[in-house]
Length: 279
Image (tube, rainbow, N blue to C red):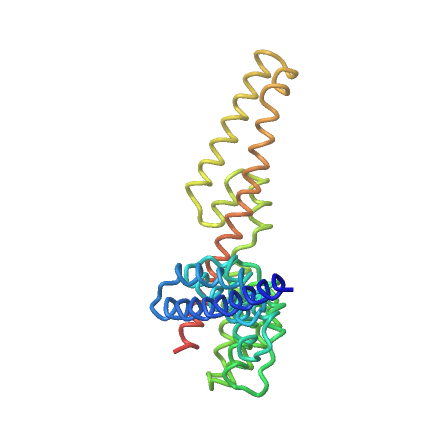
């Protein structure tokens, strides 16, 4: 019995001291965050999360750690911690900020579908600031998913709340539709099948267009010479696989160049819109 009492006493003292250490570490974490030392903040936050067996501080530490990773542009780790904070907290404000953080992290990783799962789970509870953020983020997510109808609906609601000119969203969508028609990845692919390099020229990438044209032309000429001098079988065996590879490869590259160009155009359009709307 004496040994049992001794063990219980030791355990109680350890728990008490350990609880104090967690409180001190949490205070250090918050100080590091306030000072902009985000690397140290993540280190302290993860330490608390690991050792906090009571889960008393876990949710808020996930939030601080997630935001610190976000500010270091480590969006994958940021999203992971934000998600845990949203799941573990009982505080509505912590949950809301965590869901916004999750959504924005996934958006910056170009995973807009996953971002929407978090954004659509946010309840504004008649809080105008939260509602405006939700409408804006959700509208942007749908925009990059090319669901322009839903994007326009959310952005129109946002525009009404911030008293933005009614034509602003319509102009945004009009410019986007023009760029979408101008840069069609499928069209670039087809053009490059008709004439290697034409898809790159269509997308404004002259250098890669010339390279594609010369490469396929060179292989075609080489194949022709092998055919004339060694026969059709040798030409098929030695040159045809390379010609096929680069012919279709350049068409796929043309498709990717057009898609990237369209993405850059959309980024510019959305960046200009956000600069105006967040003034």
